[in-house]
Length: 297
Image (tube, rainbow, N blue to C red; front, side, top):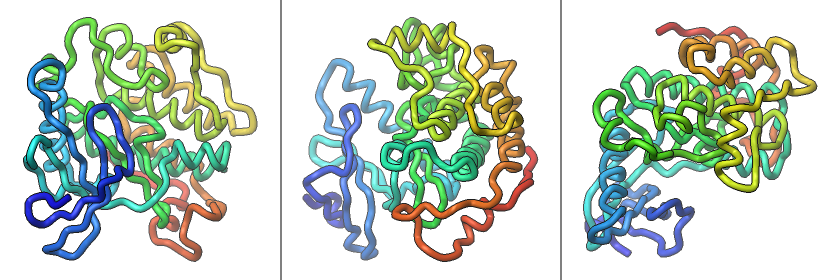
């Protein structure tokens, strides 16, 4: 398939989600690989909202310049589909990494969480809440860097939250949703921190924090059940993890900056991850391995 007379797109998708699919592509003009996300349009019904979300995601990515987020190169319409052309990202999702590796070494689990915090900090400064942070939306690149993917459910706080979060609507992935998202359909920056706590727990244990036979069973556990401490990690890291997983947003860390700075003390001595990372030294890995990295808002 050829889009916009320049993007050659593979027929088989790399992945699908909802009504959209991501394909590998090639930009003929600049001779580079790209990722092309396609949303097929249908008239009427709920697909109208999906199209609005797709357009909004493109606008969010266009204003979001950060090395931890894929760059948006182009956006438009092709036949009966909307398309986004993005930076092609090599790597493995954290979901696949945990599935293949099991519990991650503590320094790597914390390093991935800390890099995610850096992206969240930048997003929250732009009043963007991700609302769907989960292992499938985090990618570990061969150089040790982390990319945060899929801003399709993100909202610009105080502008479109009412339009895209209607009363009684639950938006997100049950295993990673904060209690306030479940109970009130409301997301704030510390809702993303709760999701990060769920992801960090999963990286440390190899298991989802709360599971159940139905989405509502999982919702009930998020709202009512206290998370367990993780064996084999320091008391300090356990305390931070439990703080991220507090039921009330005000009891969680104040922001992504505070979380990043607390995580920094646990990122030293990164072990190798054979099969997932490039061998040899890496500037990203060297940076991530320095304990006590700090930044301020």
